[in-house]
Amino acid sequence: MSTILDIDGVNKTFGGLHALRDVHLKIEQGETHAIIGPNGAGKSTLLNCCIGRLIPDSGSVTFDGNNMIGMKAHDINHAGMVRVFQTPEIFPDLDLLQNVMIPALAKREGTFSFNPFKTLAKEKAIHDEAMETLADFELDKFHNKLAGSISRGDKRRLELAMGLIQHPTLLLLDEPTAGMARHDTNRTIDLLKSEKMSNMTKVIIEHDMHVVFSLADRISVLARGHIIATGTPDEIKNDQKVKDAYLGEGDDE
Image 1 (tube, helix red, strand yellow):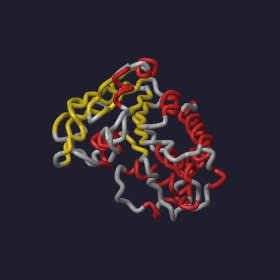
Image 2 (cartoon, rainbow, N blue to C red):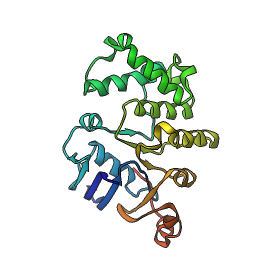
Image 3 (cartoon, rainbow, N blue to C red):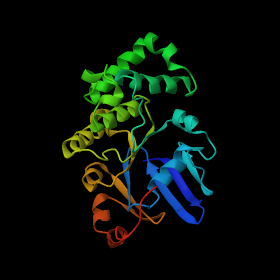
């Protein structure tokens, strides 16, 4: 396999807090790679450094052979690295169909500064693809409901649909099952393992070990801003350093 994302020696501080310490991580094309660790380990900070929301103090982030440091977030998104956030970033006053069509239009146009309402009604091809994508996530029957009115689990699936329709080269998932009931969690696992998504390169931050061990090909463990272990699920389960790292740390940002 070839490396699609190469994080090399990344450091990030906030005042006196060293959030990331010399992080080295390679994500291979086609794999599902989980990043786990105690609260406060720096997991969300690491993803933010990858997508342009934060600029590392030092180190490099190379995606698909290109340096991402200094690039604007929407340009990184257009390059094929798409993030699904822990708190769903949806348009609550628009219906589900519009929510899925907008990122598809934005990805095609290469910018998020356009006015989507001038083109939404005219885009039959994107309309049809959005309906198919909603169906993949069992949301098509709610396509004309306002996004703000659906359940938390359905909002999480809606944002996954908004990510998938952008045809990402790399999909970053930040706590994709956070706050879900077990049946919604299992439905989300099945979706992420479905034929349409099984070969997509994915990086998942997740606290639910049932989710991690159900999905991950490899797992990296972040503790106090530093990668302490990377391996297969079986290797990580039996690593004493990993077991010790989950004791007595603070909350993630």
